[in-house]
Image (cartoon, rainbow, N blue to C red; front, top):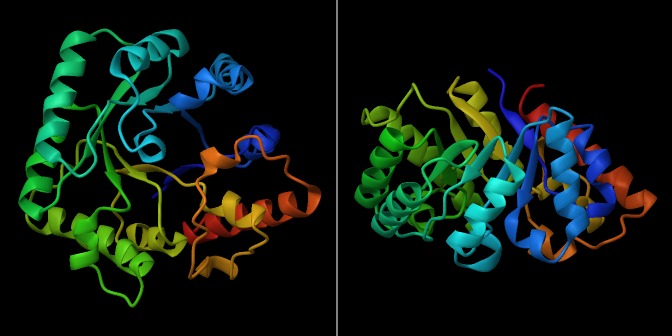
Length: 265
C-alpha cells in the first residue's frame, strides 16, 4: 500500500519540497495575491507533476468564490480540484457540489468531493453522495464529531483517533466505497497515518499536510517516526512569504523524511 504525500510550503522552499513529495498541493486564494505561487504550479503541470487545487475553505472559513474558483480551475487545468463545500454541513455541501458541477460540467481534472457533517448520519449521507458522484472522496482531519468519538487526552489526539474510527466505521457498516480513491485532508498528529497502512485500506490514495513544514519552521523536529505530540497553531498560508533559513530547512527535510517512515516508506 502506498499513500501519495504532498506538503504545503512557503514559496521560498517549494522547489525543495517538490523533490521529496509525490505531487503538489496549492491553495486557490493565494493565486490572487502571489502570481509567482500560481506560476510555480503551472510549471509543475507542464513538467508532468500532478497538482491538486484546494478551494481554501480551511484557510478562509468558507470556500473561495465559486465562479472565481472555476475560472482558476479552467486556467490552471489541475490534475484534481476540491469542489467548493461547506464546513461541517453535509447537506449544504451536497447542494453546493451539485450546483457547482451542474454549472461547470466540463472543467479539467478529477472532481474531489469533501465529506462534511456534524453527526455520523449526516456524515454518512454526505459520504454516500460523494461516493456516487465525485471522482475522488476527501475526509477532513478536524470535524467536531471526532471530539466526541475519538479517544485521547488532548483535542489533537481525539482528532487523530476520531478520523481513524470514522473511517473504520464506514468500512464496518458497509458504506466505504472500495472502488473510489480517497484523500485525507490535513492532520492533527502525523502518527495517525500509520493506522491506514497497518489496516491495509488500499484506496486511501493520497494525503496532504503542512505539519512537517510548519513544525520545522518553528524549530520542532519529529520524535523519529512518532512525529509530534503537539502541533503549531499557525496555518501554512500565513507563512507563504516566509524566507526559510538553512536550519529551518534542515529541520523540515528531517521531518518530511520521518513522515515517510510513518507511512512505512
